[in-house]
Length: 155
Image (cartoon, rainbow, N blue to C red; front, side, top):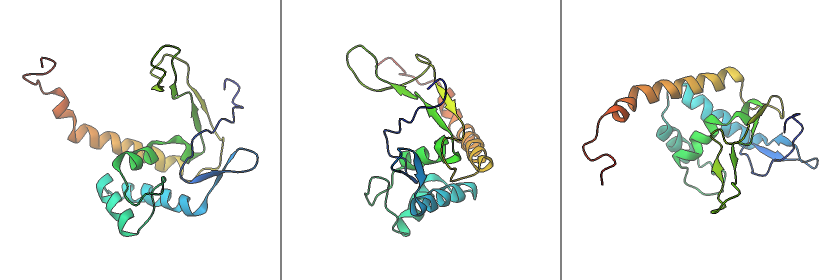
């Protein structure tokens, strides 16, 4: 991972498929869906309106189910693989019980490698989506986080 040569693509990434070398290549049909999701979000669509549009067009989810969930769309919008880059060691399995995969919040080093596969969306669109998500979060959810709750951590 340190020298950027890791080819560990264990999970399937919607929009890509593994070729015989084990590297990722673009799956054209799924890549169009990823571009559509980014385009709808940049045009001002909410996550729920994107889900309704995908279901109206009868587009299947990455898992093959008919129903899209908000977490799937958010993961697509925030995954750096769609701009051709890869972040390694986002999660890890600790050596203590319970042996469950946990998000890496600084326990281990993370490795960011650019140009590991062909990009589906441009970096400008990816950054614009990231900024738009941050703006919407600050506008709609920040006031609820700062409110003092009467029974917070008491029950």
